[in-house]
Length: 219
Image (cartoon, rainbow, N blue to C red; front, side, top):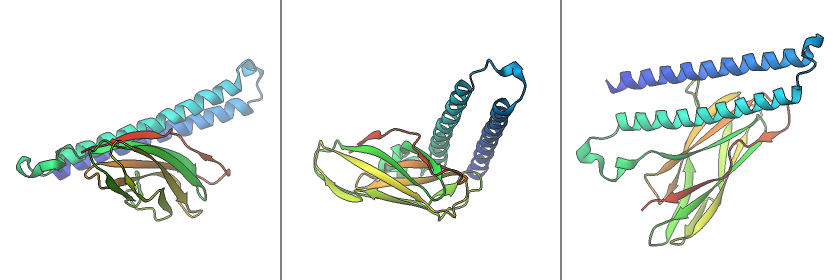
């Protein structure tokens, strides 16, 4: 039964992403027609304002992607979690937060967050992540790699450390939205999610869509 529920969740998620992708594509088409239309009927429309509105819509969609992915992972974890008598300290396991970024193939996407040590003792921290997987096709993308700076470090009790998450995207990378799980060894079972949107390589630019996050290590 758990498998059927998971499949239903995957189907609903895919439909939602398809609707959003179609909406964005239609919006791009409309913006293009407005900018290139020879008619004088729309000369009183501020095209810069239209572009700003569209950019805002795109960013909202990215936020929705992140929230939807987090919700889906949380629900799936609850469905597939171990029985009550074996749950132990994994009871509260779930993605702590999501880091979202956007860029082109052949670019680097730099995201950051702050890790707090609320424990009563010093902790040795080491970061690692899983391979990136396509949201649409559920296939791994080996053309995206991640390095953390610092990768491993000691964090004194009550102190904080700023972590840079550098995502390198190969020129061969396919376009689409991909996710990866990352965790700080030493603070298990907590983990967080990295979501990257890779666009066709038409411009040499990189856009970070989410500001630095701050998380608190749990005891």
